Each structure stands twice: as structure tokens, then as C-alpha cells.
Length: 30
Image (cartoon, rainbow, N blue to C red; front, side, top):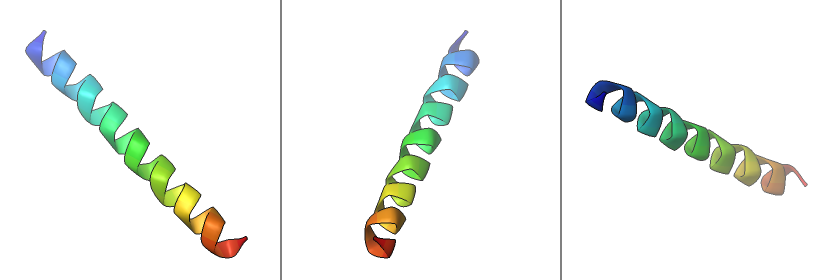
């Protein structure tokens, strides 16, 4: 269970980071 929670947390963290990077790039390109 702990491993599953860790993987879910890591997946959520990576998704947030990618989202921020995409937003920054869009702002720079706009």
C-alpha cells in the first residue's frame, strides 16, 4: 500500500511540474 501511495504521489507531482512548464512556455510564446 505504501508503494502504491508513493507512486500516486510521484505521478501527481510529475503531472504538476509538467503542467507548470507547459504554462510557462505558453506564456513565453504568447
